[in-house]
Length: 479
Image 1 (cartoon, rainbow, N blue to C red):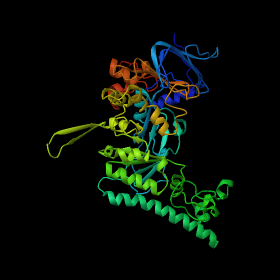
Image 2: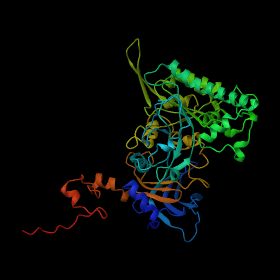
Image 3: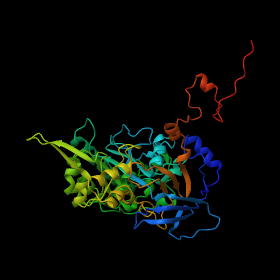
Image 4: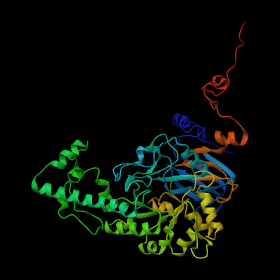
């Protein structure tokens, strides 16, 4: 028997936005009991015939005999498998535009580009990807601040798991030399230092330019926090002397995110399309003190710098193309390298990326790793626990444990089996996806046409009631 949460008005609005997912999902109160045939906790042995109790959006208990309140809603499916859900460590999808055409833009936020009703997020629910780190594309030298989101919600605020998840930096750019791109990145940090030094000098000289500029930018430099000054923090080799005399509210908003990065309060996701780019990225991170907060997003032959990466101790997000193929310049023979295997051998923490949001999502990438000899638990961790840790959300995501977020997949079988489907998705203790009511799936598998699906202007479209989706009854015309 399955007892589902009751429909709510807020959920009805969301259904209009997402078009076809879980038409009986509820905003709920974050309280749910899940009973399944097997729980893959990802934190220890699987639990057979287990129960997960979620209250207030968090997991309260997990086990064979976990107790819950008498009035809790129950999702009872002994034929299904519970799984913590996949975590996408880096994605440029889900935005109306993934790139900007200005060189240095750390003051921008992908919040303003994310489209909550993008089909990408709909596909993420179907594939069980429950957290996505949306980052800007690689066309800026220093790009926007990213955001970790859930694939469900009416607004960006509802979707957000972690704002300002990190600044995107690119050491290479199509159509531009590596030297020029690296110089652009370095110049951004030199400009930051110059700006901070000027603030100190202006303060000593009694000039009020920075305060007036803050007011012009629409900020209030006179709040309690903004009026405070403090010395530069972090481990950067360079420091601005006497910076503590400058109120923090006087720092230009275009430079402030870079200052947070240098002070160790923001992460950097650095895009590297080759081994040479990796060397440049690590040098820039060391020069400006954010190596400890750096994640390398790799592509091409960047894996050839695995020794340098291991020495630096930074984690990586691998290219979706897990096999790198090159030709021996002498013999002409093709050589294939399985990239995750290289990083496993070097003991470098790596996270996987989806090749596409549907058929080759994170489950497929993890299964591919198993096929090439990566131990099963490590392959699953590379798409769950490791990316959660990289995103500083390891205390909330990646496993089914007491205290973690109530984000659970109910699967029809093994998480890595090609025949397995996501049957239900629970986010923060609320049911948000039910495959049996996924209209797109019903249309593909059963030929059930969605309401209002006929092209506008056709006779069929005009005969459909826009509210119920049912065909109108025609009145015969009189002669």
